[in-house]
Length: 82
Image 1 (tube, helix red, strand yellow):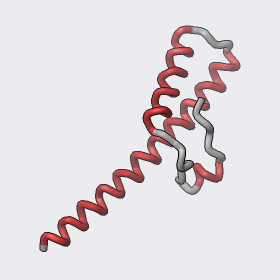
Image 2 (cartoon, rainbow, N blue to C red; image 1 turned 90 degrees about the vertical axis):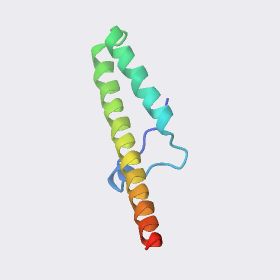
Image 3 (cartoon, rainbow, N blue to C red; image 1 turned 180 degrees about the vertical axis):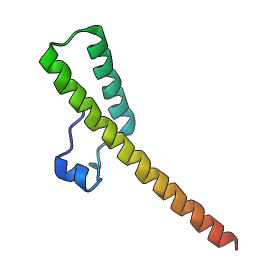
């Protein structure tokens, strides 16, 4: 299972260096399958749902950071072309 980041990490939008987008998405998919299959008790459903939401926030943070990097690189290329 993917290690959760602390709330302080989420607050400053940083991800652990060992964090992996694909592994996190796979973990979310696993959680969804377990919930849909009815494999979990109700309390576990809520816990796993919370975990999945945290993972999705991490994915969103990752994608936002990468988009900002791409935007910056694109701007740099445009400036260099002038």
